[in-house]
Image 1 (tube, rainbow, N blue to C red):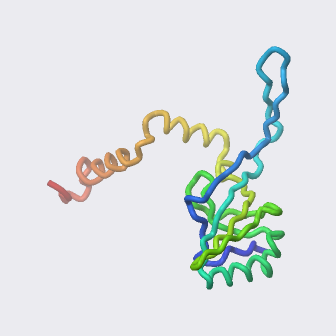
Image 2 (spheres, one colour):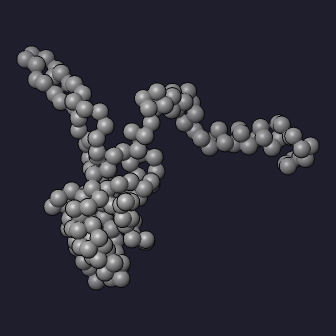
Image 3 (tube, rainbow, N blue to C red):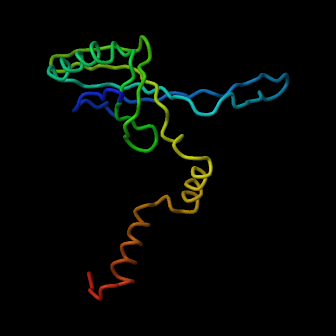
Length: 166
């Protein structure tokens, strides 16, 4: 059975969006030297604190979703989160006792922390290194890359014999 998805029109404020450490690294103190670090586990979840700005109507729907559907955050749900690849749908697990709500005259601001698996773990180590190598080889400027491709396709290799520009 699929996880319930956060109701339509409810998305976190980008300015009030923060992520935390994923963990999995341990440190052992060494007398007279730098501590030694070791990988305890690879993968895991990362905490993200999100704030939802809600109109009175949206707050009503959120309250129904929170209390009746995800049972005060005890059940996982799907929400758009940017964990490194832009906003994507992630399965979210609400952190216990992280929920708060502040209301002003027009809006309610619901804040909570969720744990999600970062999108970086969808890639193998080899694929991740290949992307980093592309970045390091100067392809970090995608605008220039696409402009070059546009010139090549539309001007340099004019397959149809139609001139698209001056």
